[in-house]
Amino acid sequence: MNIIENELIFRKMTLDDIPFIVQIELDAFETPWTEEAFRNELMNNLFAQYMVMEYRNEIIGYAGMWIIIDEAHITNIAILTPYRGLGLGKKLIYEIQRTAQFLGAEKMTLEVRVSNMRAQSLYRKFGFEDAGVRPQYYSDNNEDALIMWAQLQQSMNGVNKLER
Image 1 (cartoon, rainbow, N blue to C red):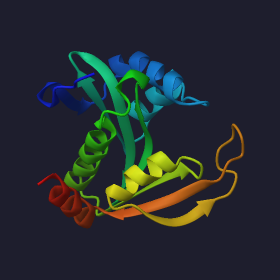
Image 2: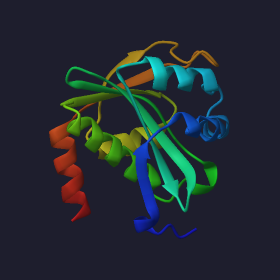
Image 3: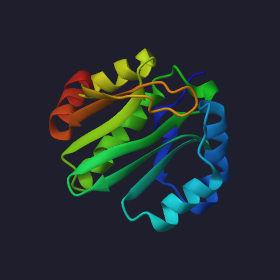
Image 4: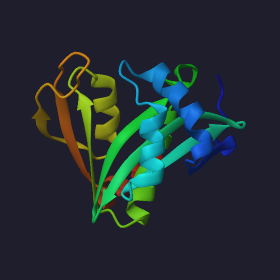
């Protein structure tokens, strides 16, 4: 599949997007978030910021984070299966980091399954470094989560150098 970059649109998630986001969740995760969880995030969580990635009027990915003072915590990030492996994860992470920085965040954190080496490798390209482990974090199989942190200014500078 040849994705034409100038046809990618990143925008704020709306309530109307939730049914599409739930389909991405079902496609991407063993224990997906529910429609109710996303509705709660958008309507009641003042820290929550969610964005969608569209391609030719179809939502193909999304990312969410909480911003608390100067820290951003990625809550979810997912791309539909047919669009994986095309470099779109990089674009989505870049956009969420850029948005976090615009909203005043100086650093960013996330948890990732210790077995998900592909995701860890991608996050490291964006300046994330290992910071600890949350034992039995994932309820579906009690897998540990690796905690990763990035300094946004440094990580954004590194990404810009890579793209030149």
